[in-house]
Amino acid sequence: MAKILLTGGAGYIGSHTYAALTEAGYAVEILDNFANARDDVPDRLEMITGAPVKVHRVDVLDRAALDAVFASTTFDGVVHFAAKKAVGESQKIPLDYIETNCTGLVNLMKAMEKAGVFRLVFSSSATVYAPTLDWPIPEEAALGYASTYALTKLMGEQIIQAAAHADARWRFGILRYFNPAGAHPSALIGEDPSDIPNNLMPYIAKVATGELPELNVFGNDYPTPDGTGVRDYIHVVDLAEGHVQSLNALMKGEGSHIVNLGTGQGYSVLDMLKAYERACGKPLPYRVAPRREGDLACYYGDPAKAEALLGFRAKRDLDDMCATSWAWVSRASNMRG
Image 1 (spheres, helix red, strand yellow):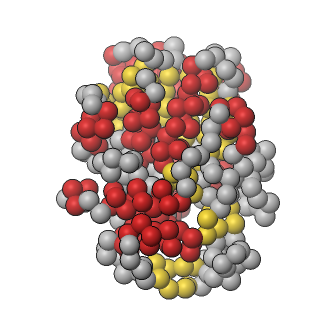
Image 2 (cartoon, one colour):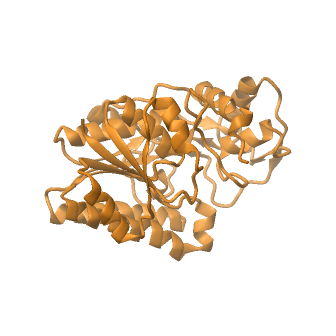
């Protein structure tokens, strides 16, 4: 049984990937500093998987602690999520983002190299693409960044590729994804923002639970079917399974890859709102606000390469995303306390 280190494994996408990797037969250990994760996530993962969860409470900025983790056992590969991820915050504290997301990655790769571990699946982002009016966006599209967060993801990709260019032992999967949504079908793990969310679905979820009064729809005059912005949303369980497929390819000795993980279609703001109303069984208040500067009418990716190289295809639709999100947020035991 191959053993995998999952950094940031107690976070939103990381915890779902832990469940998917375990289901796929991998032995997984989590490394997380719990700066942006619930302390009870390992207990919840134990309920899902039926097995104890090994956790290393370590920060990727602590190189000595990373070395100690790799010295404690023999890993066959790493899936790397540990990073800061709030776009707006990254503009306010750019050096913190660069330190955690880039220096943290370098520390991890140096520890891997020292331990002789050269398989790495990297959580990247569609924010590495330059603004475009051509959709869906292929992996060969022009790259760029509009935030420090996006810069750190682009730098992360370049760091990995530079290491692999210099040392042929490295094999990597760089996964660029758009907007993860939804929750595990058990309703034991899900997205859990502690403040006002930046992303659409968790914002709508807080409107549905009464934590926020209404949804602001920024612009209803875009050249889209209903006038509201269109984005690519992917169920977090589909996304987790994409990480498993990426790792499977590396474990089989296949070459490195850079792929989009998405559905290949866009959903509008009102599509999302209506689907969430179906999930929670009640109308949700919203108001139309002016467009935000920099927002594009559409933004969604082409997942064809991921299907061709990895066999990846998203199976769950918008109703699945909203139903599982509502099951998660409406359980009182999931509320932060």
